[in-house]
Length: 227
Image (cartoon, rainbow, N blue to C red):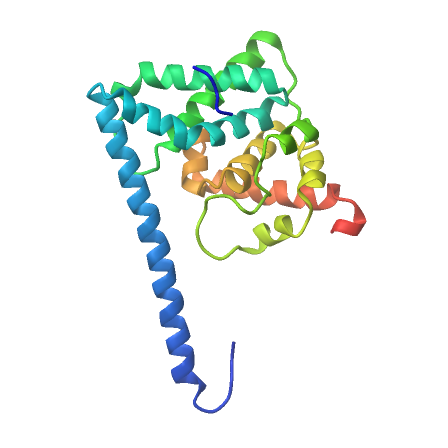
């Protein structure tokens, strides 16, 4: 398989309620769109399980870039990332009948397969994971804090998004493996805490704590001018 590679005085309370209602409606629309996309992707999974190769092809087209970006950020080598990404989807195709809806987007399943392949590579070759900033930038990786997650950014996302992508990638290379992976999954891939926990095989509390420590560590690693 080849890779295509506000608070005011006076009558403001009425206005505030209106703004709050609009905000709630916007959040509801965003969640509804995300739910609809997730449902559509699972319909493609079910079609692929019935032997529809075109449906699996559509899943591949939708998720290959995200999987490749994740792998490249983990291994730092373009050719290896391409090989691992290809093997990820070949393995997914072979195992497509074994997957069932688990309350999350199917992209987390593809990422879990990719993660296991990366870990297998580390074990077999004692390869040290590193990040090659130029390759990651060339690959079109999205800026941190601009993943696929929904909702207003929290304080940790704000800490990350105010800095330049390339400098952050260099700093991420100095994180421990677990902290690095947590940052990649949460802020580059845009997975939720729950999805990240499943992929990393940890509970949500552990992921939140890991994320907090990773962001604090990044803040210390960044040059003074970018803090």
